Image (tube, rainbow, N blue to C red; front, side, top):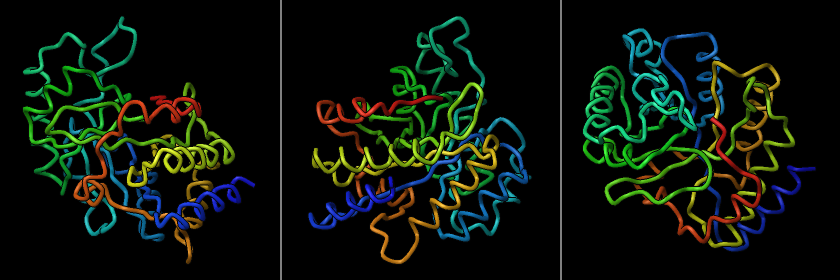
Length: 270
């Protein structure tokens, strides 16, 4: 039923001469694992590019070996160590909102150096818990990072940074479990509809997974989703994060045009 709605919405895009762009981000990579191999196999089997958000606080040589000869994966930076330094605050974050931007920049750049020396990485920063604070943005401007990836409706970012968010988390959290096919697909349909109605044709829709936390129901959905969106005649166009940024499609939309995302109940969760 929901796929029928998605197909109808995609047809409306096609009549307008437009094609929706999807991209895929997977979080929390640190070390080789069977779950990561399973994810990379799906990416390769369906020829869908995945941006693998890596936490650069360990020896990354073993992970780099696992990623070798995986043409559809591109590393991005997932924080510095995924440690909550805002304990007692209203939210989890690697950096307290009061931390000097220079301190943020120093730690981010050290992590980037470890990551980029180990693997082929795109200069995109996905903060743990999707927490983007003003001092983080200011700090990122002092590093090689050129884009930030959070979750949900885009917020303004300063000149010198692009925003490339994820929107479709297949999991619910606390505890992590599969959201359900209906919940995940309805989110996709809502994002497609809101973008069409507000003329945000080039704003990509991001799929978000966490390979370490996927249960069998989530794995089954993910494979079915990739297969459906990759079948001949699909109106949905998978792109790499690099392609999106090169086309200038990662910039946030004006604040007033994002209300539909919030009204649809689409929020960041982790």
